Image 1 (tube, helix red, strand yellow):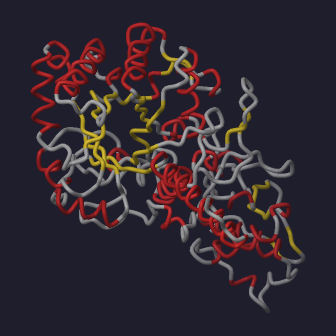
Image 2: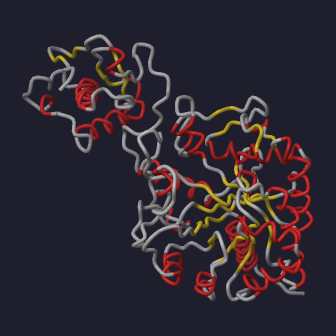
Image 3: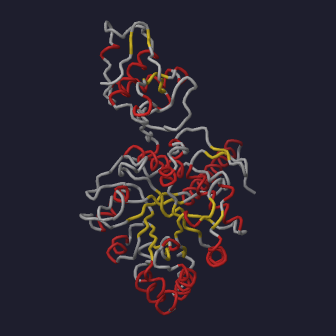
Length: 481
C-alpha cells in the first residue's frame, strides 16, 4: 500500500484535475473547429503547395475542396490538414448506377492518397436538390456505393460519407422550432439519407448563409443579429428559447427538421458559411466590415464552445467560404467576393482562425455600422430619406449613453468626414458645451453630407432623424451642403 503525505496527496489531486481539464479541452478542440472551403474558379491563384503553407501559417487544420484534384491532394500529404473531397454532381448518375465505377473512383481519388493525405470525408455531390440537372434521384444510391467502396478498401471507419444540403431544402425555417424538410424530399431523400448517416456514424453537411436571409429581409432582420454582435435576441415562440444570432436559428431549424423525423442523434457539420466583402448596389449588407464581423465573430462563436440553444452540447465544425476571392465566377458581384484572401495571399480583412489568435481579436465596427432597422425613439422619425420628407436633421440620442455617443462623435469628426470646426472652442456652436449638443452637430453634418441617405443617421443607435429644426443654445444645425 502506497502512503502519501497531505501535500503529496494534494499535488496528486491537482495533477489529476489538470490532466482531466486538458483532456476536456482537447476533446472540445477536436469537436469544435474551423476549416475553409478551397474553391479555385479564379485566375492567378498560388500553387497548391503554397496554399497548404498558407493554411498552416493561419492555423487552419481542415480544408474542403470541390473535387479531388491530384495536385491538391498531393500537396496536402504530410501536412496534418484534414481534407474533405467531393464527388461532383455530374458524376452522381455513374456512381449510383455502377459499383465498379464508384470503387474505381474511390481507388483513384482516395486510396491513392490516404492516409498520407488525411482525407476524413467524402461529400457526394453539392446542394443536389437545387441542381438543374435533376440529380436528386441518384444521391442516396451514390452515397451507398461510395461507402461500399470504402468498406472494400477497409477505410470506412476513417472516412465519412455525406452530402451538403442548402437551407432551401427546408420547407419551414422560421421560427427555428418549426423547422421541417420539404415534403417531397422527406420519404425519397431525407429519411433514407439520415438512416444511412446513422448506420455509418456520419453527419449531415449543411450550407448555411445568414447573409442571404439578411439581404432579402433587411427591413426586419437586425444586422447585429446577423453578425453575432450584441443584440436583444429573438425569442422562439415555439420552444421559448432566445436566439442571439441568425446563424444559430438557421442551424436549429435543421436540427428541428431532423428531430421531427426522429433523428435527434445525427450530428451536423456546417460545410459552407460566409459573407461577401463586396456586392452590387442592390446587395444589401455586402461590405468589407460586415464580412470581417461575420467571419471573425463566427470563429469566436465556434472556438469558444457551446452548441446551439436547441442542441447546447452540439459543438460544430464549420467551413468558412471561401479561401480566395474567385474572379471567374458568374452572377452578382458578391459571388466573386467571399474570399478570406486575395490570390496574392494577402488577407482581404484581418481575422483570426485559432483560439490563440482570438486573444487579441476585436470586432472593429464603425459607429455608423450596425442594425439600421431598430425602431427609432418616439420623438424621431427613424432613417428617413430626403426625397420623402423634405428637410430633416440628425440629432444625438441622449439615451444611448456617454460611451456610445463619444465613440460615434469621434467617428463622425474623424473617418466620417463631418465638418466639426463649429464645435471647437471659440467657434459658433461650441456652446452649449455638452456631449449631446456637439454630437448632434457632428451627426447632422455627416447626415447632410451623405445627402440624408437611409442609414446615415444611425451611428449604432446613438442618433435619430427629426423633421423639426433642432436648436442648441444659439447654434442652428444646417440642412444641406
